[in-house]
Image 1 (cartoon, rainbow, N blue to C red):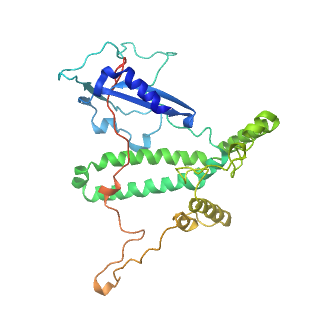
Image 2: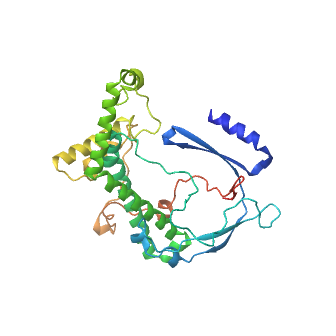
Image 3: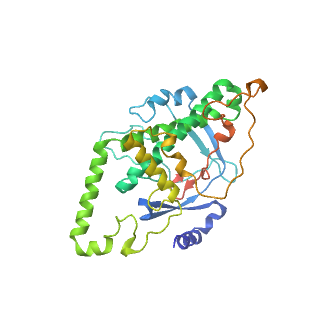
Length: 324
């Protein structure tokens, strides 16, 4: 269905040629989709940007806090096929009077994901397994990059390490704040009560109970069918066995009062596979001049640590709305 919609839009706006960009965005975890058509421009030039100390004023402590007193902006200019600045009839104009109390304010862009519709089982998994692992990963990676940059700033600037650290620091603060919310008893209590009320409402209605009564059973899907295996195993219902053991071990360790570190459950996340040959290791003989590696293993090459899996950055203009 989505491919048919995209094909129809491409045919409808075929006059844009190679500049046509069709984007179909899932909302509400796939409950609704929105289609957008863009005229994409590839000749985008920087006009002006704030200096680093203005754009990053306040540093990480001011990040995600309000009010924030940084001046972070950039102006870009779109150029057409003729090499001249592109002009369009529709665009957002500057308002000389500024924003007044009670004015409507619109933000451009797709909404971010939300966990408001997640079940208690999903939220507990995020709280106990997924998000703590993400915080630890981001923290270790950021500390390794900072150590590398402090040791050799010139090499760090050559690989644009500072911007990568800014991105990691931003993700770490957001993820750590998410974990704080998941660990707040009052928030989880409200979610637990809302789920209880939902279950009671479904059970009280014969029609709803017959259609949705099995939704909260961990081993069954709708209408009593076995729950399908998810392609993204390890992120919620449908997890594979090793990841499930990881959560169970972590929960058992907390009940025993053991530290929720590596030995609490990390060993349970390795997937079963063929037997591996033991690696040959160099003898750690002080007399032979082979020092033992630092605790936690040797630091990673920051050039590899800085790689990210990101989608294509798309610069363009929305059809009928001017520069994007």
